Length: 295
Image 1 (cartoon, rainbow, N blue to C red):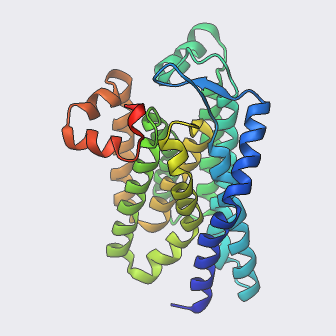
Image 2: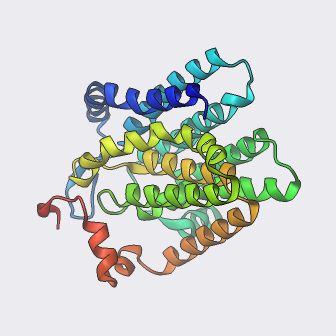
């Protein structure tokens, strides 16, 4: 493995650590000024849209990696994946931010948003998010240069649906981040066995800033002090879909896509939280990291 990629990894892991404290303070102040408070599952007002912090930290680190890798090699293919990851994160986070800024939270789920469009002819913030996320997925999938129409359809569909997958789990402190870590590990394991260590590492290296940023943000989310919001959940979901598209075979992408579709259908009829609470081992994992007063 070339030393330049090891240095790039160090940059991706180091920058989030260096900027975390000052960036968190700045973001929290800005969110307070905008009145970004929402009532959580316990009926308590909590700061939302904390995902702005994750996205900002990750993008700063990605920029550092891109500058370094760009200086070390002139081949655009070497840092194309990093550019597209950053662009996709910013785009889906923007649409998630629009949804976080809406104070009317009565319309929920695909049935609710599509129902409002059908009955009233009105685009809800959720529908704008679907449109914006879908458009982003189409563009990113095209930019990655699919081998065929079939692979492009699978990639675009996976990139379109994955941002909302984390949203389904962002109903309790730190739950979405645990699912994010789990899905990244699954993608990396599949990539390792299908493409080999070096190839899977090249694809996964751009996720290092996001992984470090979530680790640093974990205690704030788990402590119930700030929520990811759609801004953060959408960005993390996009990162998951992006790694599956880059680092796994098309058949694995198709299976994951069907799984994600199934989760969305299930969530329309069954509470994810109630389902988790039915299994003791899942409930223990779900509660890990939360402070006692939140339970």
